[in-house]
Image 1 (cartoon, helix red, strand yellow):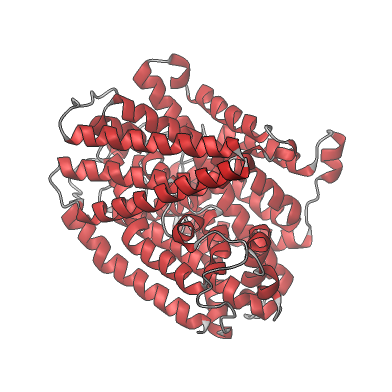
Image 2 (cartoon, rainbow, N blue to C red):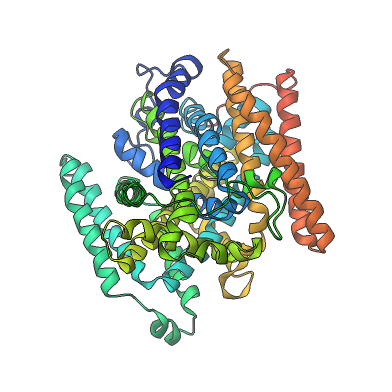
Length: 560
């Protein structure tokens, strides 16, 4: 198999999925209707609820959901063979992941832009809502802590990515004011700022930023220095109106990343390297069994519960008209899946353009590739881009910048989502401090920073990261459950959601149970306990939902 064959298969599925399946979902299942006012208009406040051009919102949504997950996960999972990884990424996206994101977006949009956890309370009662919100908050804290560490590590490992990663902040603010305050057609600043962003990439390649001297003066190592900078930034970024920074930053990031993906795919088409990875490798050294662990190793790109938090946390508050939800929710996920496909091509074929033996060295064992997933992507992606005549070192800077930008925008959104949930809890339980966006942002940043400091070197989040994959997919299953309950109440077709719901809950519950048993056998009682608690939370939420379906719960009173 060559790289072109993989790309052709993936994009044929994406095109058919969007043109046929998403249209069916929009018309027959969700019954999108542009005559209905969306929360962005009903509750417009100029801060969080802002009617937004669908292409700008698509850029925000795409980059917010696309963190390091669709990069690291597929890079690791091809150790089981490129065929199972590709099938899960492509078919999983079309029939499960994109349905999940689309469903969460529409469900939240039809409930005044509330988070998916709060919406659950309307259908399954107060206890289910509280349990779900606690699970969401815990996962958001974990994401923030780990992504802060990962971004800081990338800044340290790839100092050429620092200038382009931070240059986008003032450019995004200028873009926001140009479009929303001065009413400039967004296409004009888009072209100008994209040119400036790519000039910043070249500048970063020429002038890498090493913060060791400054960090040393403050008594910090470079990683911890960057973590502090990142959390300081996200505190302000999560509280500013979305049009000032979040939207334009994500939109410009999205365009920048799309261009990079186009370069990677063009490189694959031009060079058409042979796939050097085996099609199937069902028993790699030291790896867990392919079932169910393939399905949680590749989360983002095929399915991710975190996406439900973005769909119902930020995107649902900015939909200008209901039909835009199809573009933002379904197409946005296919965009992320295309990144995962690009990673598969880079790691299984592009990497051979850099070194003939590189794949065998990195994928010699499970332990080896878990440590080398990002270098595998950087090397393989750079190999494909350099086949277009672009300098190899500049190509590495481009790929490294892509990874940093995705991780950074996801962290931005995650802190804001945490703030939204705390605000909702403040409204529901009449806790005045939580209603204040600055207080809620401070709590969000403070709890995440507390987890960071739980282990030396800013690695606190890594203590619990081994259970995140399964927990994230369980969250996806529960988000599908909320969409199912909504469709059932509205007497809409439920099968397109019910089938993925059952499959996801079975697969991920099995993975979480195996994680719990495995950690207990290894003597890691902390992770075993956390796995058990998450599994019990899931079971409790499902039981509450079943009880609600039997009519044992009353309706949820609107608290807004």
